[in-house]
Length: 322
Picture 1: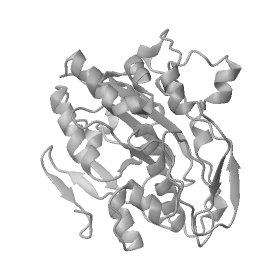
Picture 2 (picture 1 turned 60 degrees about the vertical axis):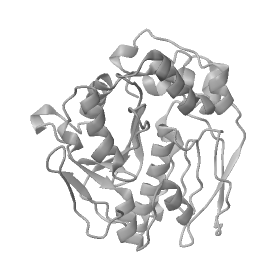
Picture 3 (picture 1 turned 120 degrees about the vertical axis):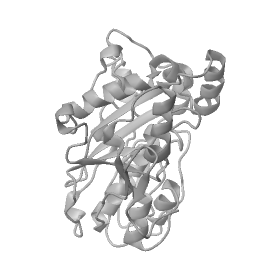
Picture 4 (picture 1 turned 90 degrees about the vertical axis):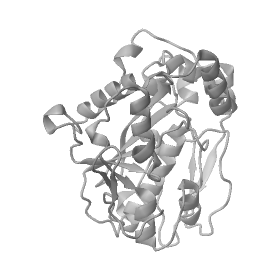
């Protein structure tokens, strides 16, 4: 896991409120959800919310001892890696959250990219959370994740406190947000270091992504919010945000039915909804599970939108969610 340079020597212990959301652990049973074949996937969730709706088809049952992700660790700030009780309670490996049997991918297609970067931002006024899950397009395995909480640059401290309490307080992660959040421009710098470590980006490539593409649920994240936040933060829009894949459009054209949003896609594919909806890291993981299922079913995941300028976006699919 990548550790940020700004996180060195900073150590924090999750408080009780964080444990309120993530600390109530019990064995969790996930059922196969495909009528055609099973796709065995396990995913991270917070205990705050999950969709208990049963799948209509049960080919097999897998019992999983779920561990929530340590959000201090995703920021390179966990100081409890030598504490057995903490390690027993929280996951510190992205690979623990997703297990896929690739032998079941009987319809899998060749893809235009080697890697997918599943992005799901949080924050309506300013970006508050920037999570990315790195997926191998060939095996659909999760390789790594990048996760940063983002501190707004144009709000007073009182407004920030109110904003975070309303957004993350009910999930019990407001403390970890305050302990770890950094300005958006620093998030981009650390993200570029992370991309470089995975050989997915470099200035010698003209600032574009290498063999990889962003995957989002809708166009809002890259089309609207990233440029808005760059403008607010007085930061130039990075060239790697010039094209992306809207999974809703891929879903529409592949399954021949509309699904406006992650929750709808998960319900229709009978994938249990796990985690806290609108906690970005959980949503990014759930979107990843939808992507894994679609790849297994044989979907070809292609670029759906391209930015010709900061204001001009070309949508490449005639049949798309509008």
